[in-house]
Length: 111
Picture 1 (cartoon, rainbow, N blue to C red):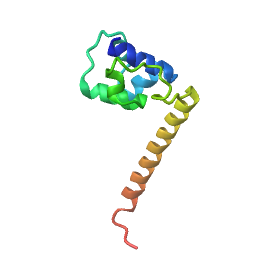
Picture 2: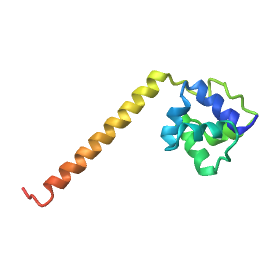
Picture 3: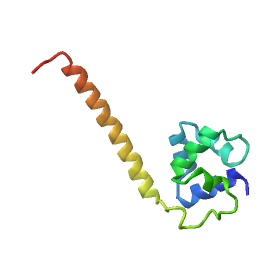
């Protein structure tokens, strides 16, 4: 089984959309689709990031002897979980920006 097919099966098992994974990778959905369809070559750094997003080890993606849908190797994530994770990540970014802004405002003020 091709690496691209294994990635797709893992993504589908996690109930992640191509758009969700593409956003995490910082690429367009159609670019990610080319990865899953085996049209684009997957460089090691990108494979590492995909594995991280899918919460599996790279070896799991590369080793064709391991069945993809072995539930002991993959924790299933619901669409709701993915949505909540994305919301929390956005909230963290907002808070980080607020902290940065407050630091800039208080810079030079000594108590």
